Length: 291
Image (cartoon, rainbow, N blue to C red; front, side, top):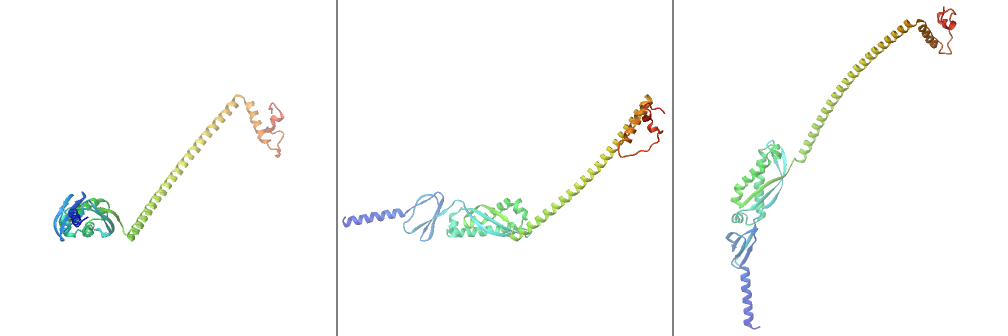
């Protein structure tokens, strides 16, 4: 290749490099700014293919999607002066690329630091006007919405940043306070358990006393009924004996004497001394029962 060919090839290469360096592409998820010798000459460049002056122009790209920043755990005081350890995060995005670049120099870490400081101060103020119950359960969503709107009043105009959401991940009592709370809760639960046990004992005593009273009444009624039944039986037996005596006095007298003999002679060890003329032996002496 001759000298002219080398020069032509070099010229073509230079042209290609110049064209290549004058074209830039911005993705859909980003926006750009154009700098010339470090000075801002164009902002909020949309996604697509664009051109710039080679060498002297520089492009900076910024992600405009929603980003999240975790805040370090902080301790805030409620209106009752009770400390709470709070973990939270911020969801934010670049809304005004021009203002974002002018206020932060395009430094995302600086933007996060500025935003975190605003949110930290806002959380401290919002917790300071609410009770522990309100920030833990009752008014947490209201607190977050109020704080988001409050931060956006200045963050958009000053930093070009819009806060999409602020969320509290966890609210906890400090270690020593937690131990005191748990100890107090345990004491209250033990006191409540003692009350329940005491009521249970009183109820059991009442049940036992009522059962004993009912048992006494039942036994007394049963005894009275048994005595009444026994009396009726004895009366019936007496009437039966009387009827038998009236029907056949001799047979009844014999029957009663035989019962007396059975009882008297049931033991072999007993010795009885009886007059031979005794009425007790009249049926032994005379089977007809004569005198």
